[in-house]
Amino acid sequence: MCALPISAASIVLASLFLGLAPPAHAGKLYFDLGWGRSSISKAAPIIGTNESLGMADALNTSLGYDFSDPGSLIRIGLALHGRLMSGTAAAGGNTAIVTVLPIVRLEYKSFWIGSGATPYIWNRTGKDFSALGLSSNSGAIAAMAEIGAMYRASPEFALTASSGLLYAQVGSTMGPAPAWDIQISARLYFGSPH
Image (cartoon, rainbow, N blue to C red; front, side, top):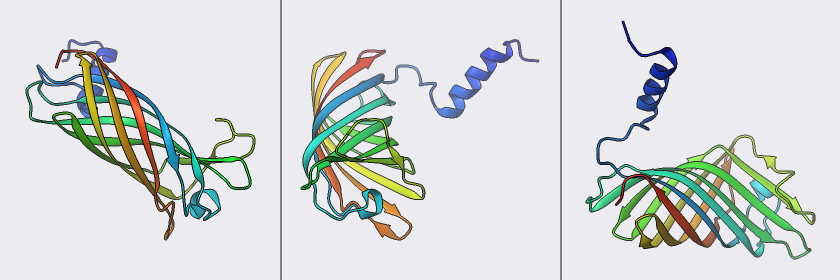
């Protein structure tokens, strides 16, 4: 019989099942927060128009884990990533596409590539632009790819520059084609030193 209380056993089993229990001497947890500029075009399946929108704000945030040992040449990480890409319509008003997706990142020295996909994609269109009023896109699948570079200022802090591409498909229709952004982020590391 198990000597652990049910609550502790549940936590241990859930950690093992989700892959959250890192091996000894593994990498570390990190948090990203960034801002930049983005552009959206041919996004009728998501926002209802194929108009090419002007540049506007882009935001991203990630909570991730680097699974690699500190001395690894190629590092592997997994993150839960949120990204907002927006554009400005010629008639006024802003349009935004928001996604939340799991993303896998491969890092070599100070450069990385990442990719992920999700059915969680929302949009917001209008002159009164705010985070409220996001509309879900049922039946949509979004895929994102990113490339980036990082400057490690200390073991706990890094500055990053990245660019992302977002494609979405609703039924058999693709769009945007693609939405893209360029961003600067701050990354905070928690846990064992690299």
